[in-house]
Image (cartoon, rainbow, N blue to C red; front, side, top):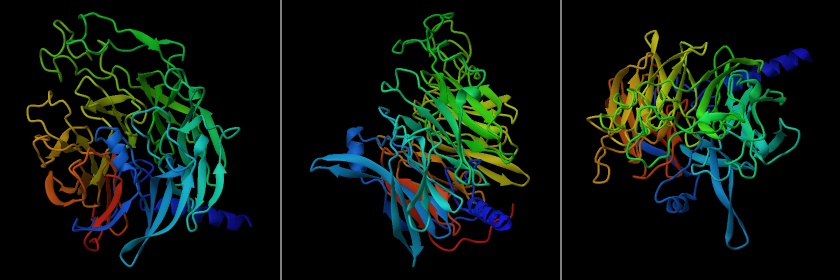
Length: 535
């Protein structure tokens, strides 16, 4: 009996490990790389509507789609995609609902096999809707549920097999903070926190890191045990000067005001990353002050390993990245003018950036910073928590990684929102070396009267195939294939242009590329992929 159980456990773990695209950014390390060569971008092979509410969502937000969408999950001929819809109560009132749909490739078409719903709901009263991201693990689909729970869904039938609840009761004031992550052994990890009715003006009443084992045992560890050097929740933490002043800081030695910090909780939309040695990385922030964030490392047994502050890491503000005359006269070189300190990585809930574990075991995290035209910073840490430096763009991006020739490269985006920091403004896909030095860049080529410098890259997690070709979509509604050296290899128009949501991509085992725009999931390809590239 024990031998049979052991064999079953090994088989289930293999399912989790071998799924082609089991979770956000493809794998527990979030490297977004595929072991196959993608098909040419010749045809739209499938077009699935997963958010029919987009027209009304655009209308209510002045033409912008303020939503973070899930990545499709891919395994064999199966495609699992999160959906959003309305259930009508009476003739007029509609209530949004979420769930996951299983499709299967049959005779060249995506055929719907089942739909499974959930009582998950986004945190209330926030401009950008968080993603509702399922994962594949242990031969099943796991779907975020209400109250910070996890629904175990039968992969073949869509039936709900169990609700896994790490808490004492079903409490709908508890919210899953971001996408779950599944490791190669089938353990699922995610963050959660509990909100008061006045969610954003009073402190959270609990925050946790949750782990669910393949047999369904759930453990919730309070974050206060893991972020050991964070300020006391009642402490006063440095904030920022009042915005609206022409020049900041108000004077060269001005001191910014403080606010109550609040408890550390997981950043919204942050998917934990899990390294090959089992170390879990999650990003947290003070609930009442987003400028006090941490990269937190947790041992596989859920004990604290280390936590690294994101504060006062950058020295590139006044008269460095910011042109002369931007800051007030006499401002100290390099400071963030909004608080007159060295720049800090901000963990904003409007982002979906998640940690990435690189092949050398160092960690990347794309933090927000407003003083450099809202570009943020891509922060780099060692496996021991030492800060190594940053690339000056990190806003809402989870970089992809291409391993080649005994080394690796990092692919991210670099949008320019204010165009004050670069003499040749534009919207770029950028490849960096392991030290975050630029190797090449590709500029979005689509221009209009309103978009004279090109369209933003709306992708928040690009993908790279086995040959190093980068796949990314932009707000012009086009999916691009960018070759090494920053050369355009292929492109295909999907839909748009559109003030698009932030969307991740994926590649399946047959080389089909999956991209999203306007609430549609597109599968793109043209022929069977070539052999796997030699690395």
